[in-house]
Image 1 (cartoon, rainbow, N blue to C red):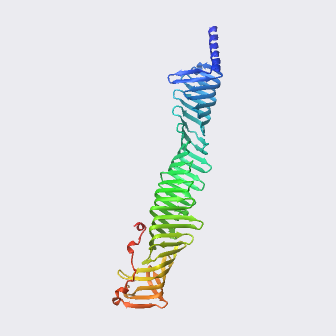
Image 2: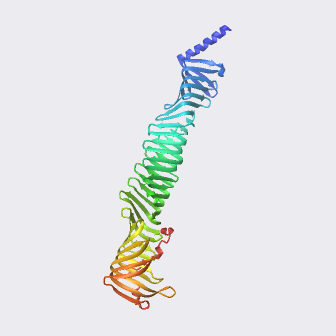
Image 3: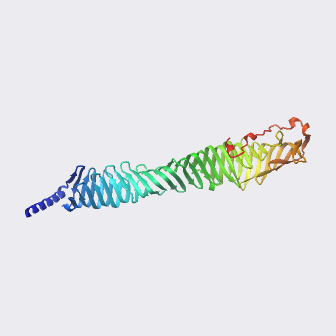
Length: 509
């Protein structure tokens, strides 16, 4: 028995010497083989199932992957347990390092533990443990990971992750975060492609870029070109301005944001909102417009102004906010309604400007002119200015109209009601005199027809209460039944009640 034992020992030592000299041995099964390319020492260990125990500068190969370590156990079923400075290389770019490796050759899967690093071209993943499928070239971690994209300057962290090496794509979940000197992204689930720098996110997501904050639940972000494409309800917040939409695009370099579907633009702490179907926001110029059933909602004291126009523009500058509504403009407030083709409001002077065939209604009075201005004080109507062809019409009854006309008119408001109106320049009036019967009802008894330089009209609850003629009036009071028909209706008098918006929804009619 001694010669046989001596011969076996000699053969093992010779095999180990051949490994150092020639670097070639194999362990083979039906699924392929793990090749032993090098080891400083090798011995068989029957106590661990006939495994080959390798020590010192171990180098193995299986398929297109190379494995390096300080020591390893290579089992007959192609399972490899490797220890100490373990490294796997696949192809010309992917490298995985760690301290402990369990490799299943039949499945070609690797489980690496201990300060694991995965490097693929310009990207490095660090994690406590990693499972890697050599066939599919897919790595998975579930104990937290950190990815550094050296090309894009992005650092990504997440609780769980999956790396698809073939497409250079990561799938992150659980407390995902992307950090960059110019941006931060936090979300629940994110896909990231290292070759393009494009992220896709699902679930609640927040993107912070300086003073710009984007919130969404679904979309993509091109970190290389600073472009965001969001496909579900999303918002952009910047300098107290919020743009929301069902779909949203934002280019940070140009500062242009676009939104579609149930769009809402909120400004200045929520006191002004603009709704519509489509919006564009230019953050550099601090300008925006909304179109498609556009509606502006603005708090004015204790009341609210609702305004519609084909397109509504907002501009914000050093002098404050400026709002412009164009084409088919209509607005409604409980005490004031109007329409025109173009309306402009500026915080700088707190004045509403109405241009191109403007009409204004207050109570029972209708006011028209070439241009109308409404000065606000404390967000309430304070003064009214009508310039050019100023005309006031008020229904005295179903067939008779009180009328006042002049070159200009100036009105005064109190408690959100028009209380007085002063007409100047070639003023004329048709005013129906009334008397109160014993039963408290009023009836028209005559009509006062007058021309003068100035007329002052007193108002009460939206009706003409008094008319005062100043500076050489030429007036005639006719009994109603004897008034000439052509004296009852002045040229240009037109009652446009059918166009008057009587509630919020009517501004769209």
